[in-house]
Length: 394
Image 1: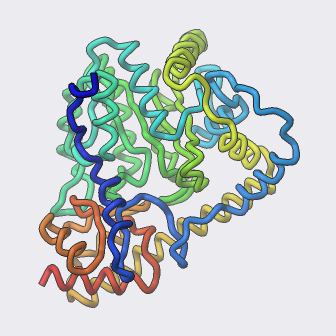
Image 2: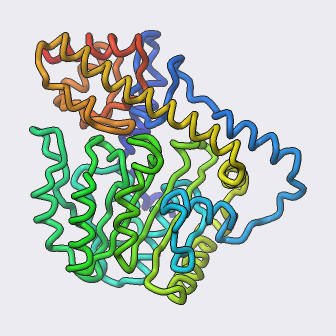
């Protein structure tokens, strides 16, 4: 049987991480893997998470199964985190998933089940797992222009013109904030125009919210999503707790479907539970219970928000310091966009052969398209990156 298998295409980010680990040099810099690191280069467990885990260890009395929908307290808390205190819970179908990736996959399966022949549109630069998941779910997909490499910003007019072609039955996948890999975000005016276009053309928005709190703040990062959810009859939302709760390995996420009516929401949730059941049966409990505990306790939630805000401000500081250092070194404003962008990632605009030179000659690891994890830097390694870029760019 197995002799019929073909080698799968390599995952470029995972392959880059493996190459970094195998590199024997002591002076090397990993800006490929998408994890937040502190000034010491560590990905720490948040204080609020540690305290929630302590409470759970003392209070939990069973490890029996959850339902395929997962922890309902977690589900409600996550819906409110994404959609606000006025979230229309009676129109929401929410299930806990195995990370944000699991949410994207479950919602992709839901699209395939609900809308035969649907086309999913996604930005022509996106998280590499988006097209892979859509393909595995058997969905047709197309891309729309998103990023203007010359302006280092959203190519709004091209994006809007392309999405005029998305019609009823189609799904448009958008990054809720902190676009991966570009770091260039949609403005409130863009979100309003996309909402109007969805209502006019009849396509369903699908929002991947992986970085809430990493851009302009918890509330600001969700503003576009909430603006759209207030008007469209249906919407799909994938939410991840990997970054903002630093629960990477605990795989905590949720899939949210906004339906036109409470009856449609109830039917949708039953179908989502069935899809979860045949995919992984039941989601894991621990990480979701941690998040529920944090969001349900005012003091713990306040401490989490404070830590998250410190992470966000540190990333903004790194962006500013890197842009200033590159401006001083190159005597140009070519890298000023780094300070303007938001989230963990920015595309540096370095050519593929020079990305290879950064790795081979200087031990600086970027994804091949020049995506750099800004959150992987610190005060010392900014100079390392600037020196390496100056060397390869000549």
